[in-house]
Length: 332
Image (tube, rainbow, N blue to C red; front, side, top):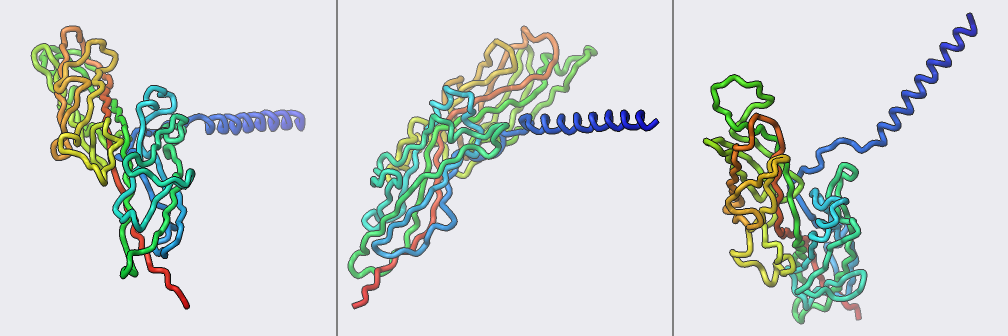
């Protein structure tokens, strides 16, 4: 009897250990998470302990936080990594009083070129199932305080930092494809054709916010709304090297979003879109519309599939921090 009880206890112990081991293994698996969320891309942040009061002759060193809060590029997207690039520019102050240098090289930052932040080594990769916080780097910056002009004992500008960068947004919205949504014949349909599908944020400052669909005789129509949902401005992607403080952007250079791809599931037939794929759309009041159609000739039954839209664009966004410069008091 005692031997039987011992055997039962041993079996229960083994089952308990096996279940614990299984839990540990499961815990080590990548968590299922919606990482393509949020309305931000590359974000700058001044340190909270940055001095706000300085004197003539001071040198202030700090790390400017550069974080990728979006979902582009992914670690396995080598080609997309090469597309991503960005620059940081400084402005908003008298350069004869404050000199900003690259803390790593001690060289003055050229206002025309700024600081390049494209990193092919993955430090600024976007959010992923393995890293829901996104990539991060700290850029070393030095601010040298020069003598104030004669007769001036106090100067209080705001140091502004702007980041320009090239980015992409990818959205895959599940929809019901039905070649005959208003037909009277009784069919076994796995999904219900809806006139619109709301789409949330996709891990970038430009997003597809709504997809509307309709069906005509022989065609499916999709109206795709693209919107600037971030806090900055959309710019032409080839202009990310322009200083937004000194050069700025013409009206013809802003609010341009490139349509790289519109694809309906695994259907080989491409959608016909206006504007056409690989051409830009212009955002008006922050919004733009793409109209796409596809023939239903080869679609025989209803099914669910993702409508994938890929957008590329340039983006600029700035932050600022106050600083007070005081005259150095000389005691004789």
